[in-house]
Image (cartoon, one colour):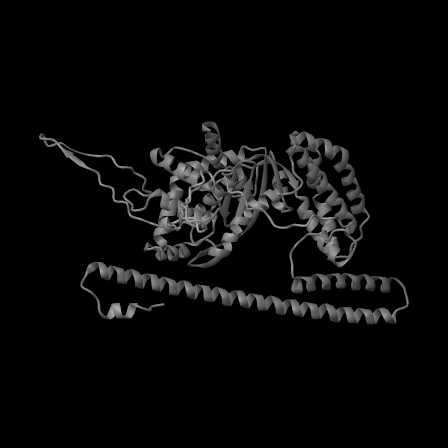
Length: 555
């Protein structure tokens, strides 16, 4: 780690620049050593937790197996009666728990895809290859290859060869252009007058920080690499060093935070656009906050709309945090079965007593709808152990097929909401009645996945069936699930955030880039345009949706 430093330290140069380079190398080496030590400790803790969970699961399996053996012995000694029936039910329940524990310990996949019913094989055309993927967005350069002058003679008769105008054999070659960094020295000419007046030419001011050394184009790329492509700042430092640029991760963070501060008015406008929508998808996931006091479990919330997506990084997953995310929102919220949303729906129109200062954050007025994909999950697990849930899973799949047909008709030019209303009334309502009938007939084993699935349907039946009365409500919450997936990938790469400012900046850039993907804006072009506008006018606002609209108008 400290290779090459010993000689430099033992033989210091009198040159100040060389001493500065030595100090910087030493600081970087110490920083890498500290990070390596932290990574080692994290790996040791993770391994210890995994070993503890494995041991605990092994103990549970042994206890269940021993209890099963005891109960079977008691059953064989009994000839009938209620006691035998009760013991048999307990055995079945333990067997179901055992199957669940074995699947958790030894399962190889988390896929929730069901096995398809056997169908008649279809004749398929023999595939001989595939055409090149079209690349309409890439710039094109043309290179013309000519024969050497000595080769422009016919090998058969010796006469000179003539160019066949317009006759070319062409092929495409996609190349990679290496990213590079360079210093641009701006000279602002000075002018003087005999009277003593001095004037200086105006330069192009695109620095991220006043008096700073880094251009907005540089900072935009750093932000994209970290929050869109999930490349930690330390890895960016290493990559830049390979390309000749010496910089520290602290310098990169200062640039990113300055860009976040510059775009605060745009973030406020984006949140307003998000909360102005009629329907929002909400979800939350764990996100670590690292600090001097150790690692804390924070929560990353996402509010996802049609043309705006907003993230919040908060220390809580409770009702007050949900109120902060919704901030007085009025409309429909689609989510999983987290009780907080159900509680907020019940508080609609009333003052909240759940926070120290109810007037600080207004209570949202929401209609709550619950995702059928989440309702399906415990039943899917139950089907893997027994066939009790097969019938209801088939019915739930019919619901999703109805929604798929609605999307197909909308893609063909019909109005999506009108088609949804028609198909849901004609088909989905009858399917829901069949599901309700199935639920009322169930007598599942206690503490089994089957029982958890039935309980979920009973607990959220009103929210699960809200889609029948409102065609705006989708059947699932997959929009929020997809939006939160990118930050979750980043969470694994850079482990979390280190400060309150880091949390706010991360949530802001997650919001910006996810919204760009939602509305079809190029994130780099949008971020550069928004930053330049904010440099010219600190109050200027350019959201991704506005950027797309401006581009469409100009074209």
